[in-house]
Image 1 (cartoon, rainbow, N blue to C red):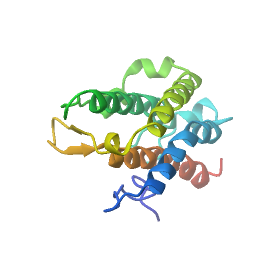
Image 2 (spheres, rainbow, N blue to C red):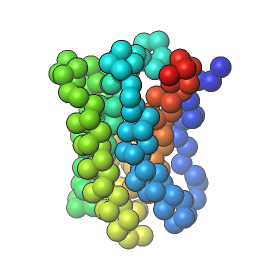
Image 3 (tube, one colour):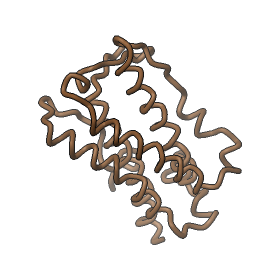
Length: 175
């Protein structure tokens, strides 16, 4: 049985990131909103409230998590492009996902938000210069220095990671 937490494995940035790899990642980020929308099309309320694994998030929580997370990354890119090695704001993604009001938000709102964020983010990403891709930000908890070209790969992976949660659940339950 595959790993339900990491159905596509964990992200590993290549040692040498070439321009073609960055283009592929940006294309994956561009495609994600359509793929997410397709993955959840026609799901019932009961299916949306089904966790993708034991003690995992529900499909609804995954959908709401995507724009929350990607808005944060979009802002981090702006900070890294306009400040010198900014220390970004961390957030508790599990606490965000567990917020009660999410139950009242139709998934179409979060899917639309994801589509809008990605539309702007992709335009920005496609306009980054080689020196922009080398800009960095610092995570306050890990003190890790994040290089933007690596972060593009991380978020391409992140989208596919959560899409795989939904698609593997649908396959396992024959939806």
